[in-house]
Length: 556
Image (cartoon, rainbow, N blue to C red; front, side, top):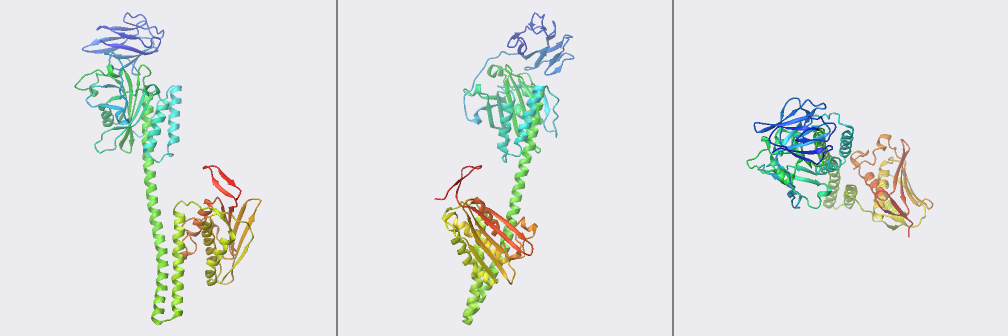
């Protein structure tokens, strides 16, 4: 016996059981009488025909619609079909409806795949091809347009903000769940070679949170979506041969009439995931426009997944290329250092054979210089390549600078460069002694190498500004100066204007250390006149409170 349930309209909630004979739908009907003034007195009729039921429009003024399409000639009804008469929406069923519940389980147990087709069979009411390059949304009504715009806008905002495909899909699922009228939303993925689809994300409406019934859907629906590569709009039904099973048990008894949208998500040519949305028809029925919207979202999500994959692949390739370039550069520089050491060792061996103290001293000096180069290279590599936690303590800046000058003095003498310190007396201030020592050493070595072969001069100045609570270290050479092009890149790692003699890590490491101490490095240079590098550091304790605020405290 066919039954009609009123989902929308003045008679919402009523159930009409019809006899096994033609039944008229309308305001003057003896079988399915409506109070809807927009319906005709005799609007439409359902009549039996060789074991099936046909829907016929009785020349109504407003027309009769089946699943959103106007009825022109008699058309066969399927279980779950939606009939619109005036402003009244009815759903056609041949069974009675009682509710059922399920037990709470883990996410993989929340979805029951009815492989045999005995629990939740469905009729396809509408389909949309999901594999086409573009899905054009037909102009919907104003309310639907606002929803569609909000969904697309929020997903567009998400694209590019998440590097993980799983995190992106979970965010898209949340956006759909937030904006569409849906009781349950499941995101299915297949990560195994067997092609088995498993739930990755499950969302429930709050009224279901307490009991969490299982979401029952036919595996045949999923297989149909995968095979045809199209999104489908379904209603629970028992009569569709495509979703039929050998054992016929009424899903209406278990779940009640439900409206379902099932849409694939393509990443390239493969289906990466599937959206499964459902809601009780007593609350809401999905429309053709909502199906097209979800299909469009699935297509947009698929393009975003491809974009994420391409970005991750590009980043991996860039990292590999950068790693290869770095290894090649450092290998070349280390080889030059080792060649210098080998030359020194040869001179030492020659001095040992000849028992020449002069040769021994010369050879050992060569070895020592190259050992210093290796030590400095390793120190700068460690500083630049990893996060470094400054060890701040109260220290004398001048004492650190004096120690650096004594270490560089021999190299300055070899280059005939005068070191002219002018260190202002100042109190001890919070510093990272080891880090500032490396900063001063790198900058001073660069200055020595930049000076001319004769008449080289370097001014080294420290200043203390109590009112501004800062200290400065200024190193000025009278070298050839830095071109504007090189000035923009002097702090880039592996960029060096000294050819094979420079690693390009000294100033990069210095800037990194100064930034960690919340200081600044200023550069002034004039071609032919020289270069000034000024390091400005806070003379107070600095503690990072959060990512946006920095706290300063007076030195103790």
